[in-house]
Amino acid sequence: MKLRNLLILLVILLATYGTLISVAELPPYGMPDNPVHNQVSERYINRALDDTGALNMVTSIVLDYRAYDTMFETVVLFTATLAVVITLKLSNKGVSNK
Amino acid sequence: MKILLEKLIINYPYCIAAILFMIGGLTVLTRSNLLKKLLGINIMESSIFLLFVAGGNIRGGAVPVFDKANVESVYINPLPSALMLTGIVVSVSVTAFALALIIRLYKTYGTVDAQRIAQMRNEVEEK
Amino acid sequence: MKDFILKRVASIILPFVFIYGIYVILHGHVSAGGSFAGGIIVGLSFIAFSTIYGIDKGRAKLPEKVLIFTESYGTLWYGIMGMVGIFKGVPFLTNKLAGIDLGVPGALSSAGLISLIGLGVGIRVASTMVTLFFIMVEDE
Image (cartoon, rainbow over all chains, first blue to last red):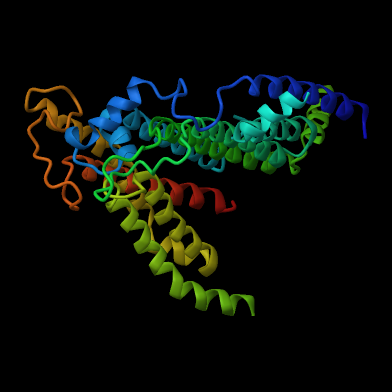
């Protein structure tokens, strides 16, 4: 094993130990009175069937309550496809060294 | 020490997420093949999704789809699952663009090894 | 011998995978699933067909014009569906305030604009998967 790999392994083991100590201080897993379940998710669960007509709560959050985020997410997918096409197609048509 | 171990066993999904993050970080920093570094980045992103979605679970809760049979059941929190869909799309986009760049590097230099590519670029600069 | 078994098995399984993907997209608001997962399943069935039967047959089924059409208009479809709210005087991308009746919950044609938007997003994600595969596979 090279010296560089050994030093990297040592640093990452120290970081793992620090992370595991702070993971033990998190609230216990799966209790219904965690700070995660506040009044935002309560309102979404109670009024999802009346505001939209969908039975699936995740779809009604993604496509009705927060539809603005999903619109820009499709734009992000379009931009990624555009970037891949530009990187791989314009190289074989005489535009070299760029 | 025993108290620490007991608290860790109760929060086992968060422990697995932290260990997966460190395994991914080790893969990115140690290997010199570009494709293995890309897989390490993917492992790190998957561990973060596990951390957030497991944070919204309730033991004994039901799937967040309305059920006509039993109306008064406890549903799990649907908000982290809905927010992580955006993260998954970002992860797919970054992986696709990184793969396109690796294809271009392979066609120019003929190898996929990061250290050999750096040596080739140093030789070209010295000439 | 590997080609022989793969072609026979794929010709039986792949149509069912395609129809299952469309089922997951269309029933996004009734049971688990939604637009993103269904779109990826439809895209994967086309990629599996291209891998087993050769790239030329895959390109003959989905020429470039169809892919360009679904990719561009799938992104515009979302904005056009949002304009329905503006023409009636309420904010952009609203569902119930714009006066669309929501129907019986549990039927396939309920929930107003959600199923239409989900169909557009699902087709668009499938087209993205197939486009990325066809671009990266060709050599020179």
